[in-house]
Length: 441
Image (cartoon, one colour):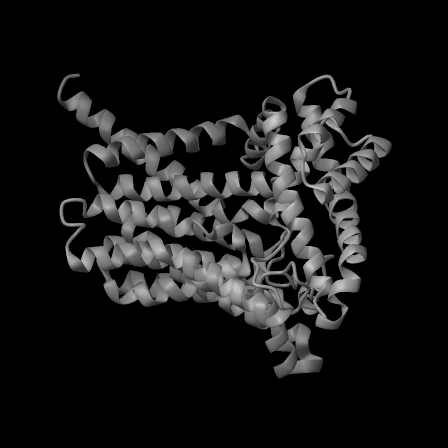
């Protein structure tokens, strides 16, 4: 690209970023229902955003709102610019696609997400996610091994902020393996591959250590299986109690199931005409099933049970979160096994809902399968990028659907990747069609 065009492009970008920044900084901070749990550093919150808001509170005190909006805005715009420039260069995007991608990247800063103004993890995790993906692209396609240390840092910061991204490094590890399959067992490649494979373990160990220091229990952040058990409870039947052997698990199942029956929050009580309406009923009442029924009643049960034994250790409160998550883990596997057909239908509906419609869903799945087959038989940069973007989108949708219900707050991270999947797929299929036409197929 000519210097004149680069300067013009950067001037436009700077103007856009300034407009966006002043638009964000002049709006008030948004305190959502989750905000207080991070400010109070409750046991079921990941350490990343807790440490961040505690640091902002310590440094800026009375100017907390302005400081957090300012930091999340600047950091977010920096990440957007870094990702935009990196992807545009790797994929050789034209000017129109360049600025369309910019619009897609900036969408989360405005309604309805407002990530920079919202005092919630998305204000950091979106930026960290963009940086993590872009740094991996730099490592894979520009063979820049110097960025690996930044890959590690951004990955740990990302997972410590949003646990849903724990397995993302494995996708890049897989592409790196295919990229270097003939030399992968040579020392440099083996070290790089090991780093990508092992950093999730480092993240888990960091989380365990954090809770040991703060809450007195060597545990991962509790609440994941409370979320997962929600869909399992929704499809459950009263007879499922016969397959539960642990007495605590049995007592909590009985209490929660009876409460859900009274509130008419079970699939068996849903008289909707089609499965879409049944799913809408589940999504509408998920918070009531998960937070207000399973979590609250389970936490209350364990607080009463643990108090006499743990009062002197001052860990009763944290242990109640730990114990209910452990119970929900046990119940999830039992209830899914006993009601698998109903559960898998609900889970699939949840994944599909995350993509908004069948067309987007089938296109991304096709992109994933198409790029995977191409990669296995013959490596190419374009197929690699398509595989990375499509698999990241699918993985995030599957994890979100497993642990909760599919909402933009969990899935917006991959909107730019889905957009790029369409662009890459169109270019690849057009190129292949032209080649076949030239050869007379």
